Image (cartoon, rainbow over all chains, first blue to last red; front, side, top):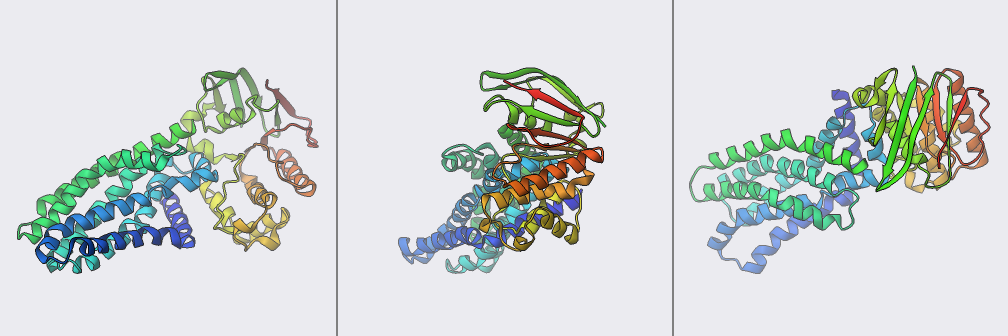
Length: 222
Length: 206
């Protein structure tokens, strides 16, 4: 069974490496959005401190969403997804593999980049750690919930807008507790409660999201 | 092993495409699905492959409902639909390897090279598939047949589309060999296929 999981992750990662442009697109988007804010708002240190967690988290969230459509759309277009539905591996396993591969190519690079970008907002070192940690817990949730949205909007015309409408409301709690944790630390409080709640969201979406995405895929092909 | 289909019905939108389709397919037998465009050939094949749910009727593989068998049925099944199910970024050889992994079976590099050789693409094996022509892409999809001697049930939808005469001959020979070793095949076709087996059934739709 793990053989199947490993081969689907390897396949998706190899595919992403062949389409490096797609992966770089949303990372560049993330960097640009975060960099534009200080330029637009003005270099007021206190203002920057207050806004930094929110800006970085919102940008990460939008960047993760940009990459969602790739998750199933190209496999749908060339018929590979059809073969996955009648694969000898359970569909749930394939979906989980695809979500993991997606996170490696979107969530993980965002997490690694974020502390570097946090430096330009002059965030204290501890807040930078919490920022990275909150993204490390939060971005898998974005990929998991996003997979459900991507599966539901499969083959729908104007699916991109619909996907945003479906997924963004569900991203709100992740945004609030992710950014809230970083803000708490820069104000000298602990980030424990925020991070625990993020962890709870991760556990919940790990259970529900792959199952829901599978059901949505089966409906799309029925 | 047998495939039994009883009283199968299919609806697309509100239109009933067909109903009461029944057939049984034993080892070494071929089923041809015939009918004009829009008569439900592809829909029937997708039902049998387990991609969609029938409105009525049942499909049994070795006596058990395929809805319950799920992955163990999928392991015995090779389905090639209209889409070639291959990635433009991968080479022909990589596409074959991935297709075999998805089917839960392994294949060696030599076997894949031999398959591409047989289908007439040995000289294009290392080229990303986006540089291949439509017919060559179709050949890569059909090269899976060369590796699928271990898969009893083949379902091919419009397998001859975009193929030239020589490639078509190879595919017909592959299906022939498959039937001779006790496999089963379901094909859609508008034209007569020169497959020699005597054990053939025909389902005419529309």
